[in-house]
Length: 358
Image 1 (tube, rainbow, N blue to C red):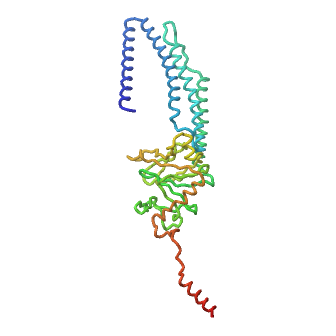
Image 2 (tube, rainbow, N blue to C red):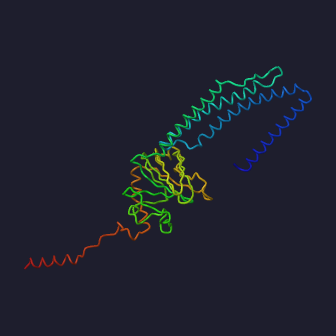
Image 3 (cartoon, rainbow, N blue to C red):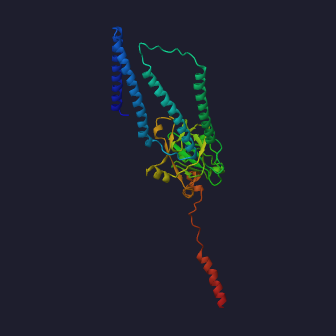
């Protein structure tokens, strides 16, 4: 919000408060003077204004929903995300119905039962039945909603399917580092004191462990496969970060020294989402949802959801972190085999031909 818009809103609020206070002061003066008619007239005006506020408020809620709905995240792009959206819509429907009913009753009662000289308030101190109803029904409803929330939470953070793609994601100020196991499907060991970016070791891999020699480490993007479950093993190199996957409706803290996990199944490739959103520049984003320092705003990662064949092709092009750190120790597949000595093979052939001639 710009400063000018904020200033206009502040002036309008201040003006409303001034008018309100003047009206109240005038009302009190009229009462002191015995002007009952003026008081009753002002009371009726306030009653009608309450009804007008109710109608305008409900219209405003509907208008804001219609105006801002196209600007929200849109369709969830994971199986868990669809369930979370479903729970959200159910919650909004229940709370929306309760909100409309209570607001209508609140403002209607304020209008209907406004002050009248011959009207007396009904003394209604206690009713066990009503208190039981408005306590038990909300309690049961909330228990059901929380129960479904816990069920999906334990499913998201529970054991991933056996065919899951396992990827390690590590947060650092202010970027994300991704690690894939090699052909052995085993992550190599690491130790934080071995972290040395100058030596191409961002995660502190232990080179004495053979399992680390084929691990792929990249900061380019997190590549996952459409339709295949992906399990994220989440770490942090420094402070508490948070892996926020808004398009997949998921998030999990990245805590130093304490790995956390979550898993999901992507439903649409990046290219499919570009068509769905009609946005050729669409990208799945990883945001840091914890204030992690002065560069927090720039801590953004990219997720590429691709087909199985595209993922295999991408992975085949990647060099292991070990090969990047020690290129001299890794034989190059492009080195040609030494050529045979043609002179050596030609001499015995010549001798054989001379012998045969004799």
